[in-house]
Image 1 (tube, rainbow, N blue to C red):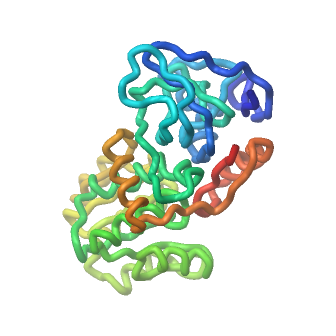
Image 2: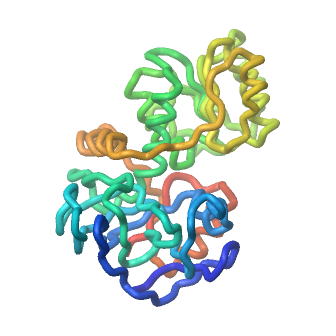
Length: 315
């Protein structure tokens, strides 16, 4: 089968020929229809999980995908041959990933039946970004009409988050770097946008909301920038970051909840997202469709952290 592989950590990903996986008890062989790219994939290539989980080389990266179950191993009860499934295929050993024509995955991974009312390939864009947005929103505890500042709003997580928060009647202020991004987030439910290339986000929020906002969800800021953003949140509010830049002590001093957020993916979250997609209330922000051949260049691009929306690899 064709797959994107690296021979060692930090190597440049390449398109190679690999053996098709063989089914094992408790696992399934899935034919990949499409895979989703996330910033985490580049971190995995650089060895972020080294020492935490065993790895297999040549390593095939990729966590998110949608595919069709081709074979089921002994003991598999949740899915059957022919099922369209999607989710996070990450499992031990790391390296049997989704940037390939086939993948072997344990049925206990964070997987669910794919949404039925959207093009199947689009489901590949949902798992990590969609579940992160949904779980962060749940953790924030924000309610109807409370004010949420979203920093890094035009990335995959941000675009899901805005829609999910808007469904709950939360008032969203989103950052964007240009008119295209601003109109996109407004179309999905943001009430206000701030162009951070033209004005200071902090100055703008202080001017309009001297008492502060109720919540901050930040996908992109550096430690110093995040610290400044947290000063815009009123006491008793919440500040969450996916960039692992929060100083828990500093948040406590400011009387804020939250901190560094790490997703714990599960089937229930995927089912909620599937329902929203099937009911037409959740738009899937696929920005770009690429081939396996184009994947190494796309991974280099996503590392720059300036990509908008989601990129999917269509097989």
